Image (tube, rainbow, N blue to C red):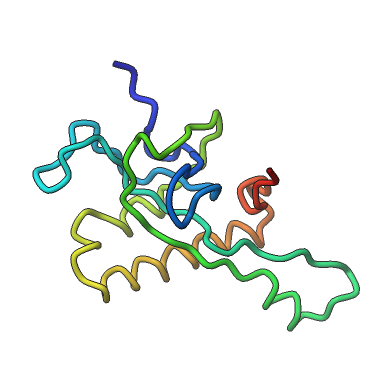
Length: 136
């Protein structure tokens, strides 16, 4: 079988609270694990997208509107829709692992690291399409 969900692949969540949100695959588990015996992926996505900014806005307002709220989640392959896009994420790979979900403090730390990386990427102007909400 062809591996569709490689690390860095952008997908869309189809089910659950984050349905319709764009995510990037951090780690894929095609065979599943003992506690999750189905193919799934560890993904990071944007729960709240940055808002529109204009030239007339001051630096303070621009900074608040450029904020991103990320989420990390373990999602079944059947609830993901792959896209043709990739996102280079060498920095994100180390921040989330399977053990991250066991303790809330580790989860918060990894969310903060992901938030920092995504905001840097947004401000730099890379991958603009990833930071816009889907319109459907």
